[in-house]
Length: 269
Image (cartoon, rainbow, N blue to C red; front, side):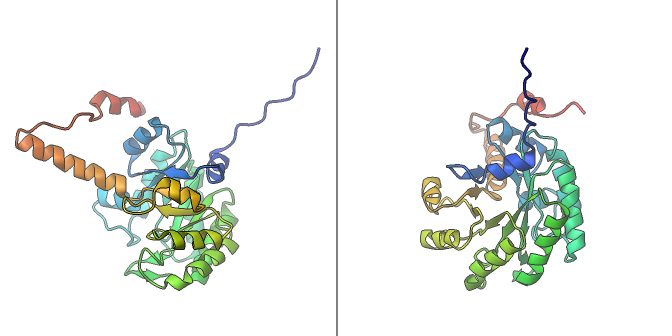
């Protein structure tokens, strides 16, 4: 009679999400805005899903990037944390300037099944945070919840400010414990390549229909490609198109997900 070794424990969502940034192909990360949109994307086979802060904010009738959607972000995260795949949540600038408060919020998200967060250094009024203070926020989060994947967003290109500080900000955030660097708004291949070369962390960029394709970004060394608010804006545009078609008694585009399909995505309780 031979004894068998105990089975290895299943990887956690934190471990799965981290590993998705170190595959041969970059992680294509769609961004949802509520439970139904995230659940539908999960059925399409996406291995992880992010949130769009614009979608969460706009759905609540609030402005994005103004630091006013902490409650709405938490509620969305609490629901999305029930999904079986890793979820990363956009928390804008952390909804507070106190490192301990930001770390506490991030810890609450992790406790509800969230595997990662985006923390941006852009601030209301199209300003950039002091990189030393931003690094302190990152360090506090990692001290409190080391398993949480912190994607440090550098908004120099997004806001069109101080492009020259991009590499230094990325290095400072990496030293503070960040797990990834997100530079939205950069599309020039040469600049993307320089950003990738400037850090050992996996680099995340924002998908653009007019920018480099997925294959090109992969060749440049990008490890994660987010859709941002694109899906939310596309959904709104499609809804208006259908409403116009109905008003004008015109054909409605086929392929719309059915009522019963949506119902099947939702938990009984």
